[in-house]
Length: 162
Image (cartoon, rainbow, N blue to C red; front, side):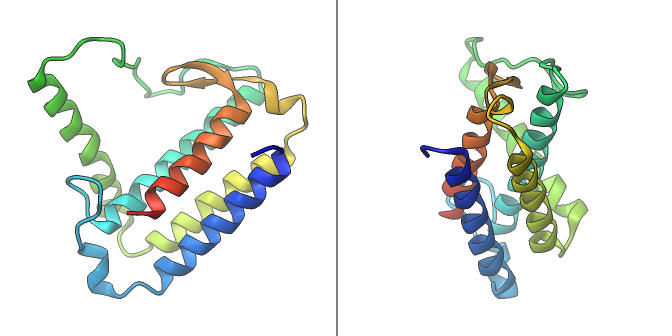
């Protein structure tokens, strides 16, 4: 994306498109396997909700000058060499989080999805050019706010395929 406004437009267009698709999805389609191992379609949607809530929280904290990890976020292990069994266990733990979230949210996934993405888009609309470049926490390190905003768009695009 070449501008902040273009990114916000893409996020709005794509989140609205996915929300409409989900609202029209037949009940039996929600439990079909997705392209993501271990997840059904409903689990992919459940994944997109806390992800974008987390990005909204991180950007909000960045605007306040806070680049520390949010409460409850553990230090990443991305740079540690894991054994095959440790990688398998980590993948299972990560896969379980959206399933647990989906069980908690129940049948209201399209509505909660729409609210979360609307909140993210609204936050992006309030950012100044200066805010766009403020440092922001990400599990891989400190990145500019605009990079986290783009990561949100990437999450939406990737998982819309699922």
